Length: 67
Image (cartoon, rainbow, N blue to C red; front, side):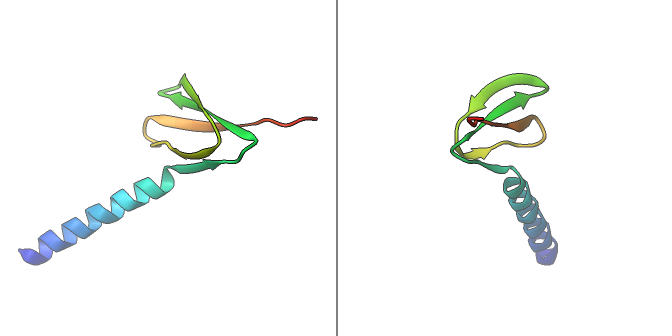
């Protein structure tokens, strides 16, 4: 029984770690992120570290530059 609990816990921790690692996005200083939540505009994120969980929100990069 202890082996099953240890195995289940380790798989759960691994899945949570993969979810968090896949949800990290870094925008550079000249980028802004437009975040869509369930297909609708939600907010604009500035440069830096952004967490967005793929199940309900999706960030899109918007590059600001002088051309």
